[in-house]
Length: 285
Image (cartoon, rainbow, N blue to C red):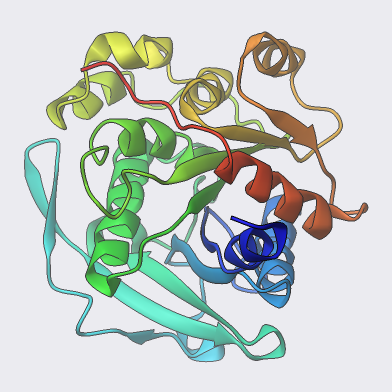
């Protein structure tokens, strides 16, 4: 393969973005801003993209013109031995020529808040909402018949996606060769998710020993899990938790520091290319 052929193949790589928040659908944060600007920039560099986020109840569907995609909706996902209908909606960001897919469910996402309630307290079912969101994205991508080369995750709600790709979906032809990149930010939440999270992951056939770090599912431990099973790490904030900096330094996973103020689109595009030249990891079953 000559250099020109290789460069063309890299430029046409398919990048799946999975983010817990995207501007302008939710208030601007570092995650929502990057999740809005990075896909557009990567698309402009010649790569193909798809973008997914939860349809939190605080998102104004009328203002942002969300509408249900009937052909993608209709399946049920079993979370902790209970069926939950999956609804898929879509909206466009006209200035970016970018479509965003929304994972929706009445029980998990109807309430008029996101990860915290009106008093700033973590939603008690954030663990199940996260699993539903992750699996909803994967099942929808399969329905689209779209095979991503790189899956780039943003936010703690996506922290379990790397281990799901390396185990639950590792034999699925849509994801068997996908590389997972996880962005680490300084958006810590206080406290822990439901400690039953590890049992709910195990219900999906993932060995508890593979996810033992989330026996106490704090922000730091969830991020450590993501680091452990990712193929690449992007440090998206300069002041991330020192324990996470140490975990990244101790890991064999390649990483870069790239902030929105820098030439982050070019840096991350090149990082994708370097990751695609390497080998992914698989969870021992």
